[in-house]
Amino acid sequence: MSYDFDLFIIGAGSGGIATAKRAAEYDAKVGIAESDRLGGTCVNRGCVPKKLMVYASRFPELFEDAQGYGWSEVKSTLDWKTMITAVNKDVDRLNGIYQRGLEKFNVEILRAHASFIDPHTIAVGDTKVTADKILIAVGGKPVKPHILGIEHAIVSDDVFHLAEQPKHIVILGGGYIGCEFACIFHGLGTEVTQVIRGETILRGFDDDLRNEIQQGMIQQGIRLLNNAQLIAIEKNSDGVCLSVGQGDTADTVIADAVNLAAIGRKPNIQNLGLENTGVRLHDGAIAVDRYSRTHADNIYAVGDCTNKINLTPVAINEGRAFADTVFGGKPRDHELRNYSLRCFHHPRSRHGWTHRSRSQRAV
Amino acid sequence: MYYTLPDKEEKTTMKLVVDEKTNKILGAHMVGEHAAEIIQGVAIALKMGATKADFDATVGIHPTSAEEFVTMR
Image (cartoon, rainbow over all chains, first blue to last red):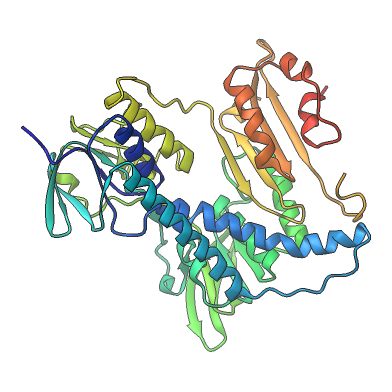
């Protein structure tokens, strides 16, 4: 039986795009569906705009440090709109690069939502396509916790589209997304309160480093409410009021307009028609083996939708390993025993930091 | 070094986790300026199975923070 495509990819994020190009290099006929912008989370709502904002947030400190080296005092203020416009303009530029990259490899781009009709047939918008092999690379999305008034909170994705700079932002969550945004906003001059459930930020990293970074962030002026639970969010004329419980006491934090829920992310696998495929889930994510194979013979999955290690370079490596194996005749799995993680903080010293997984257990 | 002239209390931390039996480096950690840029090169060494002796035998680039990774006792 002949199919429209040798490989059809659902999702043009980091994993999907890298796989499309690699498979096309092996002369596979490749199609890719994307209902949003090309580039996925990393380019549009994650790593890239985030890092640009990290850079933006560092200047006040550089101005200050310069005086130690003999430069006169720098008086400078941030124009939020100019900064956020420049950041988004660069995201547009990258979208264009991705589009041209895919076109160069003759990958057909279908700009619509895709869902399975059967293991070889996919509805893409109003059309149907068939493919021999199918790769699911739909990524993840932020989780909103069930809290009264959570609709008043924005998620990390929304930060890059705020029309105005918040005067006081409350960051919910002590993971690396929460910590990075806490430091970015602080650096940009926004008052920051970070609310975390545990004692210490950055669960999963080594304790000595967690404590050091936490101390640095507090010392720099970020207000940290730890062992805290968010009870409710209410919007009134003062702004957004958060009721926060700490042990037996409850506190109210008033922010000017914005909160950020940096609680976590989950696979974006709803409305994908997975029930028509034989693909199985594990803990709400697509179950795959080390060759990215799902339980359906011709269907594979990479990246955040498999919820293994949600990092751009991991998704890219998984996708390329799949293409090398299936289309390139060069079988390889992707080995995840060693990988690097970095968190772009800058508590005063703009701490970037990196951690090699598993190592703390080996101490 | 950068912070001495601005007279700032800034701490940089670097840590290697070494297997006592094999002398292999199991983990490398850094909190500080340019950590992400520095650790990428260290990651290659770890991927290749570098030992503490390999790190010690490497000539540092002076004066940098990164050289601390090859001068640890």
